[in-house]
Image (tube, rainbow, N blue to C red):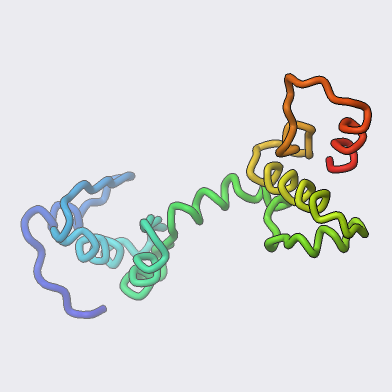
Length: 155
């Protein structure tokens, strides 16, 4: 461990704490990270979660903390808990040409409607594609049979 400055009286209360749960609130630049590094080294038998605001801060923290500290972004924590349930919606970006090729069409308006419908579905919490995902759907409008067939084709 790199030589760190001696604790202030307030930091000492934290670095020597042995209770079950610790929450530290402090202003920017007051030594929170330095204090937590010392706390982690004083409690190597404890598993500690460090939540960072972004990836750069997380990466910097990983270099400072001992192995008993799991450094994550809040997004990583949320994805591990909830995100896996939506993994089926996570894929590469679809291009209009990919859609046209997949449905074997040269009708670019039709391909664009399919792409917009898929994007609306992927941005929703729904588990399957619904007519409400069709971007040009007017739910209050009565469709002609031709319009209805087109909407069914898209969806």
